[in-house]
Image (cartoon, rainbow, N blue to C red; front, top):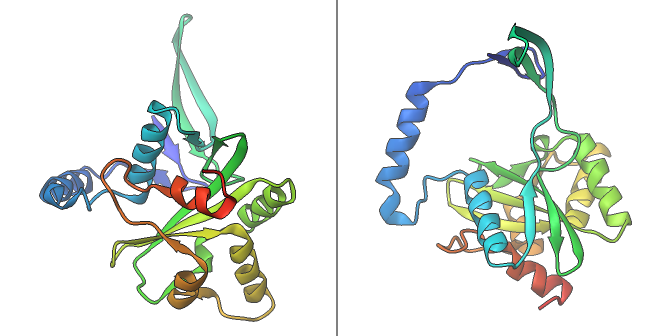
Length: 205
């Protein structure tokens, strides 16, 4: 089956990269699985929350547009070609102690700033709408080189976005993230315990 990204390029799995990733993860196993991606860490965290009845948070599936289907027999359909459509909202949502939770997760290799180009305008519009409905909305930012993770409330991200579109800098400085955000230490179980920050910010504990 052929998958195409929104820019029209075909998706082709890179088996060599996959093998390298597996080797890297195994190599770093003694260091609390530091080779895992932010998405993998968050998925593991959310599974931990779900299994223990703490919160119900899931990653939203990427929309797919099917353009070519083959019917080799009446009882079966085979998708021959499809496109990954650009998601219109954020990565994760769910509920915690009766409150709606909605957040986006991004990572960068830069050590002194976080580029705002990592976000899309439709995501900013979505986060603003969630805040207007009194939902809990934030972004989780990982500086991968330093292995540092921060929770930054969406209200601050919206201010930085406004600064950019009015002619200001196109990134958030590391100092700004450290000042306004909340660092989350990388643990074992759960991996990224962002619920502790939510409890602190919204007095939910």
